[in-house]
Image 1: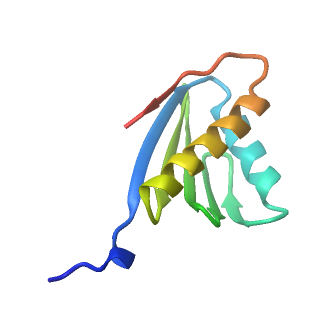
Image 2 (image 1 turned 30 degrees about the vertical axis):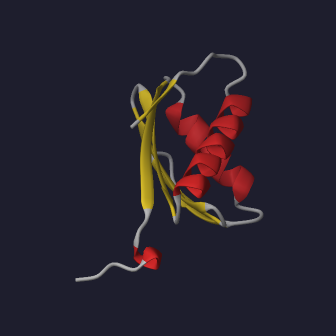
Image 3 (image 1 turned 180 degrees about the horizontal axis):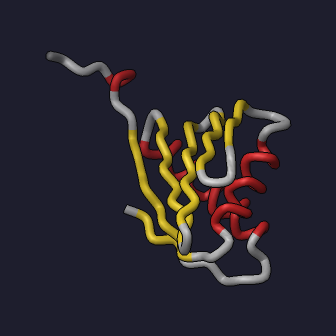
Length: 100
C-alpha cells in the first residue's frame, strides 16, 4: 500500500498536572466555540481548528491534550497556540506541559 502525503498525519500528546483540568478544558472549548467547531462536556473536549484537531481529557489531577495536524509545522504551531491559551486561563498557577 502506498501512502500519499495527504494520508499522513502528525500527532502529539501533552499532559499537564493540574487540579483544574475540567475548568481549563471547558474554558478553552467555550473560547473557541465562537469561531470553530467544538464539542465538550466536563471531562472531554474536541476543537476543530484550521491547524488541526485538539482533543482534551480532564483527569482528576491532569489535563491530557491530544493534537493532530497535517504536517510537523502545523503540529508545532497548534501546540504553541493551545499552550498559550491554556496558560492564559491558568494565570494563577504555573503549568508544566510534558509532550510526547
